[in-house]
Length: 81
Image 1 (cartoon, one colour):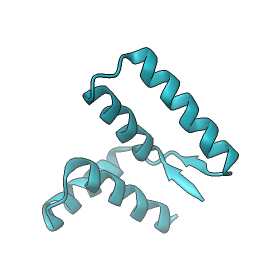
Image 2: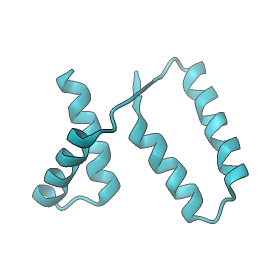
Image 3: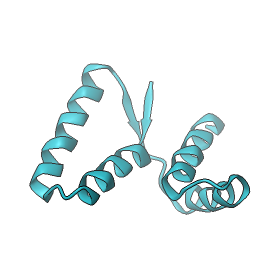
Image 4: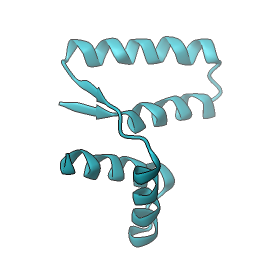
């Protein structure tokens, strides 16, 4: 099983948007990393110019939000590998 980096990024952004301090976000991210490790879920590095361009395409074509488009693009790019 794989977790794209964009999912972890969204997790961080949501925590910050909900007023969590950087130290709290760090603790949450390290806890998430440990959960992923225990369940043998690898973090996939997907973020790049090509992925962001695909995100734009998906957002426009399907009316997705920024992060939904980002997650969809990461999922599609992981299938193509």
